[in-house]
View 1 (cartoon, rainbow, N blue to C red):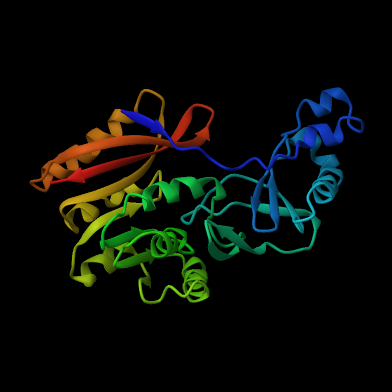
View 2 (cartoon, rainbow, N blue to C red; view 1 turned 90 degrees about the vertical axis):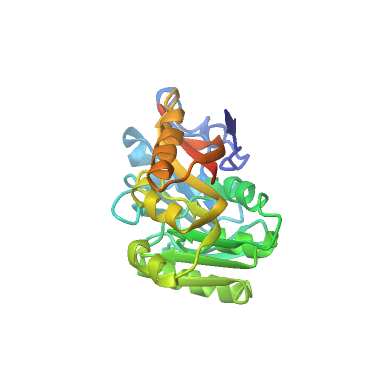
Length: 286
């Protein structure tokens, strides 16, 4: 069974409407009508044929929304080990640092060094809402700590351990833990999960793996340190019709550890491309 988690990425202002009397119809048809907001930074996709209008587009966004101080266009795709997004500032202040608010949590970010998706905010809240008792939670690939901090603020989790390899993301995570006064619940460790988790020498009630495309490489490790009847959240990219393959992959990994899936559900969390979805498999492992 698959469910869908809504995504908050559009910000009401229709860029096409704002530019309909300025751009010719053929160029207007290419324009993406919405953008993502991360703190006071607007992140927009500008198709190559419109790049000569990037300053006009950036200034228009600034005039449409007074909360925005920086407009940056995507200059490529998420890539590299840390899935950072190449960005070019096209209007406003020349910076990629910002303070983002998500369900009452403050996140200081540097978009030039850190992967962060505001579109995953509702998905993070969906996971947090499943924690209804004082659990021990492990967040692999914790980034600047959005998952740990949402868990600390909105759930009864007893302890949340976040492990992140990106030194810059870990540094911002520590800043955010202090900023949100979550030190009593959240512990962040900088390092590779392969080396860090065995050194922790304890297991967890819940393991969150929010790194689609790579997370399954660490599934054996996650299952090994997940307590009996613990809950696993594995994020994947899959085309429609192939969601069951992710569940089957977890089932096989559990079986190799002498365990089994007691129940599972697939949630569609967004798109990776027009034909590929970002999904989360929530599975209880015996």
